[in-house]
Amino acid sequence: MLRKLLIVLVLVSFAATGLWYAGIPDRWAAGRIEALFSGGGIRTELYGFRKTPLFGFEVEEVRVMHSRKGLLRMEGLSGRVDPLSLAVFGLKVSFSGRLSGGTVSAGAVLRRDSVEVSFEVRSARLEELDLLDSSAFRGSGSLDLTGTIEDGRGEFYIDMRGLALEDISMDGLYIPMGSFRRIKGAGSFRGRDFRVEAVSLEGGDVSARIRGLVFSKGYFKGRLEVLAGEGLPEARRVLLEPYRQSRNYYVIPLKGRVRDLL
Image (cartoon, rainbow, N blue to C red; front, side):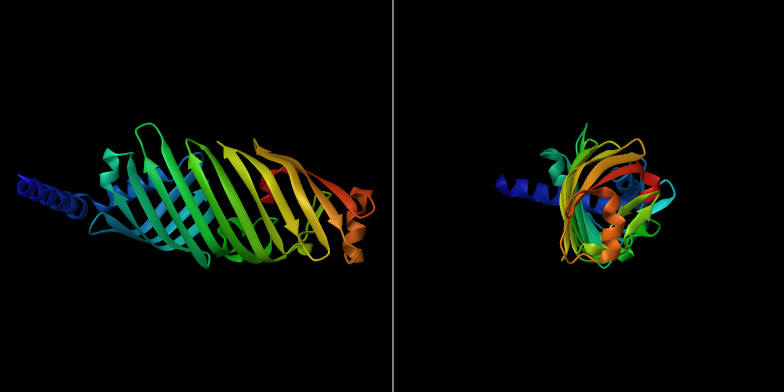
């Protein structure tokens, strides 16, 4: 009896693998994966998709966009669909690849009425991210990012190191970004509303914290508290003067349109 059961399981496994590899068109499978990672104004496009044995797949390039603006471009992805997980907790899809000189990996679980996604980016280069090509946030550095998304809600943790950034100066707003060498913190989002829970900015002669920063309905609002050391260049100190609250302590109101930043 046990022998017969094993034979049946092997035959079913081979049949399912054959169906994936030969019975499902590449374009159909790519479309389902694109739909999984799209929504809320975000569009994902796969180029050079092909299936591999044992429910695997490879993709030459993945582009993630918002409207017509490029956000991310990933290359050399390989992943796998786990059909056995469907009977336990939902269909599981996972992949890994390259992103802006670093690595990216992600996994998703599809249930009947929900989708759960987790992702991790390691050592991506800021200067190679499509998202920052035309933004006010300019410069170079290394980015680590982890996060989770479930039913339109999520959390993320960010760590940027070895920064060499340009100061931000626009519409009467000045932020001494060139003084910071590391930025780390966490945030959350629900739908299209983002909230920065806690972010610290560290430099040799200055440190800062972002507090109460919210992105909602196309606008952002919050404040940046800056503590400057005696070694802060005089040119930057002069530009910070309108925000001074006490000796070496400044509070910069952050307020404006998101499109002016990105």
